[in-house]
Image (spheres, rainbow, N blue to C red):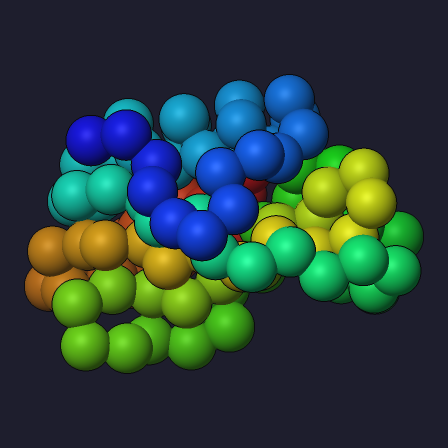
Amino acid sequence: MPSRGRHQSTSKECQRTIAKIEAMEGVVGVIIGRSYGGKSLGGGGKTGAVKIQREQPGGLKAVTQTAKGLQELFIRTDTRKNPEITEAIEKL
């Protein structure tokens, strides 16, 4: 499933990370949301780093570090596999 959302432009590093997430077992798709400039994930987050914020009905809410700030993501999942998906994303 192609990435969808309000803003579909993101850095190449983030696009590679999103492609890896979409290839994971249990992931239905990744929806790209709003971008925010000037913020960071903290701890020296590199471009393409992903942080899971919380579980929501139907998937996981996350953010990724872009070259210019943060990009919201919604990761559509088979919710029974959320713990495994979260663990795999944290290792990327």
